[in-house]
Length: 312
Image (cartoon, rainbow, N blue to C red; front, side):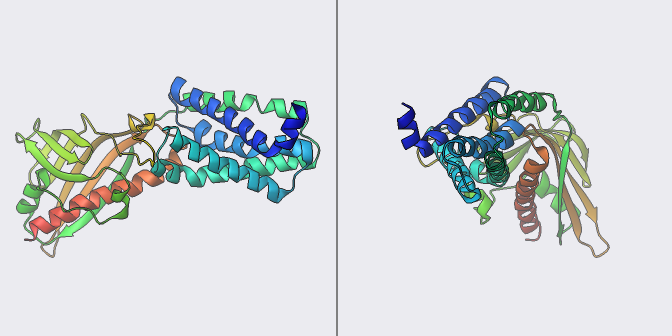
């Protein structure tokens, strides 16, 4: 058995890393309901560290070899999440920068431990505490803070006409933006039932409808609404299966929004759209970069359509 492992050391070290990483990821996601530092930093860190330690402890390893085996293990791990219908292509692409950085760090630390002959049992066993620490941190970090994204456009039309096209609008043209060709949900049309505070606005997306009870109706200056229901934020792409990973349900939540209209001195109308939301995925600072980018694209898709209809 020992000789077999030595003859197949590279695949053996990869398998050991994969088993450990899948186990930790499964516990974090399906038991603790956490997509956080554990999944996006610790797991790829271990994908770089473990195969470097296992391979290097037996045969020694150079820094380039450590990086190669670490990134190869990360690539195999991502490919198997597609094959086993665990994840989709777009989320892997979104997560790839932070995962690649973590794998890089893990590979370099593994190489340093082997090179300095510090990969002894005590050093290795200390890494067993990392999943406990990371999952504990994910569990206690608050995600109740509201984040905000604001977009605006200038429209050459009377404010009353702009208002009419805000509260409801017809079918928007098929998107040209690349982000909406990846499965990210995008708005198609909007309708409203009732008038004034208490009316219900339905902003329809490709995955379903946002149900938006009106909370402020200051015609034609300000429309505010809560988000009572929302559809899934995207349809995951997977070359093998239809997938619906847990992070599509409740980990991004739009809370409320508004449209503010301001008449300008040149006779045009400035329309400012704002969305308040929170993210239950860590690190929030990283994932909010993607959230703000996507929300701006969604805002501008609606605002450009309102401009087009109002200026007819």
